[in-house]
Length: 438
Image 1 (tube, one colour):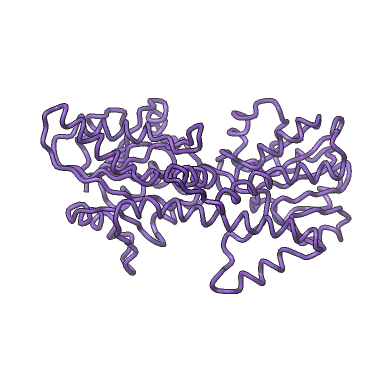
Image 2: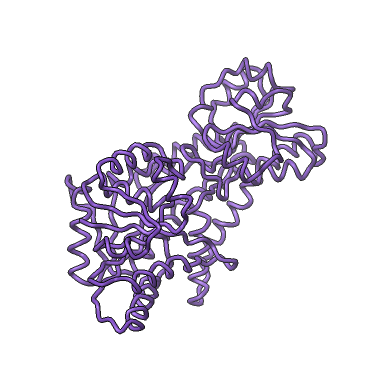
């Protein structure tokens, strides 16, 4: 099938590459000439394990191409996936300008039937706006061309996006005409050979499903963070509590790990956007507003632990940070807890050295020379008053405690991801402060 993907960001590039991998003829459009030049030269503008191999293989096979030419991209695909950014507006709502611009471009250039698919995370009602934008452009041209609009939200975890796309838990499709549904079934048939994973529903339900899923996961994280903070007050161990409640199959273990708060491009933005949508309909989502408030507070918890130990004035203090990306297996630092921690330490007069296995280039772009950067995780430890762990990279999970102790000014680890067994760390002569651990 001939498919066009509008946008070569995280969702668009993964979608285009994975669809090409199953034999589709895919063109990816982006108006950023720099990104297209990079992709044509064999580079990848984002970090995602395995994506570079899939892109290279399908470009070589002629199944995947990149362009900045709108007319070429619209002419190519019977299906037009819109996978552009929907950044939060000043009031927290999703900014739809790029989605609607893509829709208008399709309406201006299309000459035959198209299925226009919202792949971006968009508020309920966006498909109606897309449909209106396309219809308006057709009317300006005096053209009478059939088209369908569908919603097909992505459920991709950064760091595991290829696996999530190739072996999906579910494929949500919101569509309201048989022709579009048949085409979407054809596209996704190879991805669900073992059993039916496609959930076909009305468009508004599909749009809400994406927000509801992310809001639920964010809720679990904030819930556990509050319990972890309570556990510290009560003298309980949150890891034992996690095992106790996670063993209930109605609850499960996923997303029940307390830490320094969630970040990234999805959870913070989507929780805000869903709350904003509710406000527009005269409702207040009290649970989600609390989820957001808890998360904002949790991001400052490591700074609070530092000041409880050293006082508010941190002049002359130096701290080492392991982990800058908002989660492992990505270089994404959007809404990352590390940024809040670093800002909090610097504002109190401290200096910071930081290391991340993947996100160093992104950190330098965002933070510049505000912090020192190490080439290895051990480089940043010299003469630090404490080691702060902010991201749970595997590389951090089995460290040489003796080597760490020799480099630190004092043997203090403040662990924002509960990576270690407290008894083992303390047996190695460290003061160990984690999240809700005894």
